[in-house]
Image 1 (tube, rainbow, N blue to C red):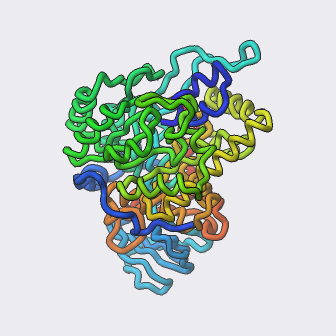
Image 2 (cartoon, helix red, strand yellow; image 1 turned 45 degrees about the vertical axis):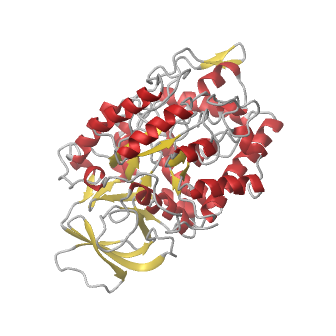
Image 3 (tube, rainbow, N blue to C red; image 1 turned 90 degrees about the horizontal axis):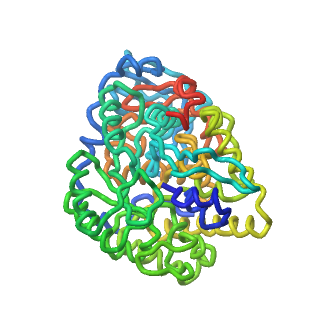
Length: 518
């Protein structure tokens, strides 16, 4: 959740610290070592036997045949290898049966789909994909400053978010922190049963947050024993991962990590009170938000306390190719800690950097759209010195991620649809891929990071994350050629999940004007 102090930004106008609160090497199999946990097999839970689409889901089904042949299509297979033109992909009973050049034998009973001029790539595995929205009551101008009334509210987007993710090619996601864990679990069961449209879900437990948090919907840990008990309780309820949050202490984090690992589950963290090196030594499995929230060198950083800048001061002053950066990255790789890139939410801090997508804006409720455009306008009007500092910090964050991947670190991808409201589920996942290309990866490498690497972290790489015979038929069909024009990744037409093709346009139309409302 990348919004921890954005409410304060509305009231005080303080600059950089509130942006963490809105929030060229391909990593194939070079991730050094294995996970810190002895993980459970999550495949039966996250990727259960698919159910037939039910009455509510059927209107969004575009392709539903036992055997399907996608013909004359360009394939980006998710391994990081160059795109291959003029390919055929055969799907049989929800699985990829064969992939090869045109002329590949096609079963006589196959539904044949000519995809000339189109590209297919693996379903995205979103590793920081929330199911809620950030609402600021009565946001507006007051005395020349932005103001909203407390408390900050986090309404669940149970209806719109799953449809938006699926429409834009996210076929599996980690919720990466929950404010309504029972809702998320029940939603997952409804999707798995074919009753509602949406991706496969790795449901993360409620935020493991320490004291002094500004969020009224969170449980505030009362110490290490409470952290342990919280993990144990929610694992019993059925969540399959955990997330530590900004104000957790080292002792509480250790208790949570130890209990999660005892249960064979992984734990990630959007940290602040605990630094990256401290978390790595404790045994955390993943760190959220790239290198934007490492507070190690923030001025006046105190043990077990969040800093004033929430990590942005550390990143701004860090040379991405310098000795301090190399030492940190070496430490993370040695401890087998993955890092999740969430560039779209941090892009919003840089004036004039983020695109204003008409399709994404059309999904916002009138109030959500009003609030986002107001906050966006304030960012774009920042003084030159603040704009420059934010731009440099963002570039440092991108460079650190490149260096981490080059050193053999496992880089994951997700958008974090929070912040100022400009990161919309699904659209944000596509934007993350585009920003990875801006960061220096090839389009094929960026898609690999956003698909295979997430599957690898979850232990699902034998089922999803790349296009190969025997894998689940989770595929995205776009018009154009993202391998040469990465923005073509936005032209999603059909998303296959378990071999069923869903109509992107129909899904988007069903939530037009609803995101931010429900």
